[in-house]
Amino acid sequence: MASTGNSMLLSFLMFTVVLSLEVIYRGKLASSELFTILGGFISSLLFLFFFIFIANFQESSGTKTGWGAVIVAELVALVVAGTVHRVCITTCFLFSAGLLYEVNKLSAMMQSRSELKSKRH
Image (cartoon, rainbow, N blue to C red; front, side, top):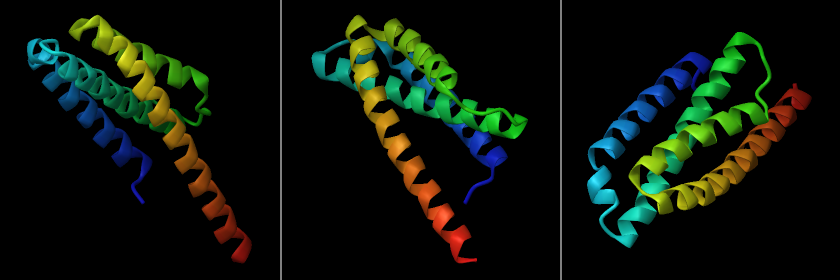
């Protein structure tokens, strides 16, 4: 499993790359309905990468990750989505909610798996 520092660095780099590509192809993403939906999905990936960055930063500094990290990451992603197209804001929010649900499920699964390992030993 990746360490907190490596995960934080990788998520920041992915955030930077995806943000740069979305800004470069802003005109293309706003050109049709399908590309507008794709722009919202790409912005939701920004939410995911920024949320992972914030969560790892908080874990490395010793504070607990809560809803504040989710809200900050979502606001950043929605602002970026708004620079592409207004519809991207809505699709970004919907895709981000789905990604947050899956991250929560994955986190619960990993936590229960680590608790089972600690009970065995």
